[in-house]
Length: 285
Image (cartoon, rainbow, N blue to C red; front, side, top):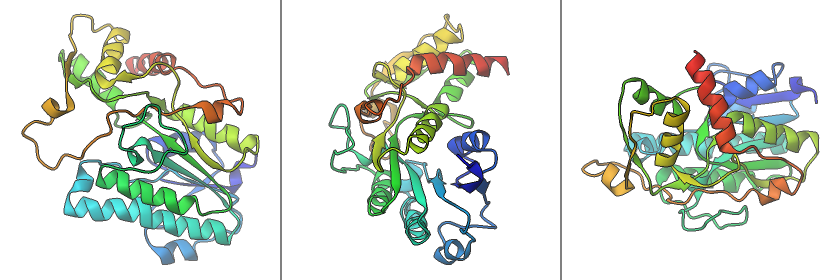
């Protein structure tokens, strides 16, 4: 596959950074060259040599999206910009790969399948769901729904490691259940779908393994980092956010069914194996 024909949006985020490492010849542009929320900016860009457009850009501040300013930003990036990219993809016969989220569901089903009806709880989830609907109107697309993403940048595992270094015994939410997704797993799946010319459509993707809570993940992080003298205390989502305002509702069940992509022959890596490698790398820094 000729990665010089790939264009990456959101190239400086957790996933975008990893994508640039995987596809070193891929093209990308900062906002001064291409503002994806601006229809004319997207329309006037030179797409002549692009065959694959990977949209890794997203507004992901879940609570921030509940504010007046955040609401506008979330819809601009997660919906309007997706519409702009979708128009370009259809016009220039480009395959659009779009990254979505478990937040397009209300968390009542376990696991979530690709055919589950959209039922977002929050502004963030609604804006992402709107983007999903736009993508699925295209002729050539891979819509990849994922959850609990961990990569290079600010993320839950790094936050917990930072607390452990300070000797903190944290209280962590125990009633939200799911599986981690490491950015290298996302990229392996994207590459697999492209190399094998897999059927276009919606695919769930996370690391495999047992479904656990954020508190369980923290206990595993502390075990791997040898913070054995520290204790992780379970707390409910309601307790964690007690007294706070402007908090977006979260889905309690975030586990994604991996049957569809695994039936294609993709071998998912257990999140605990990936987490051990990630934590060891972080501790070596």
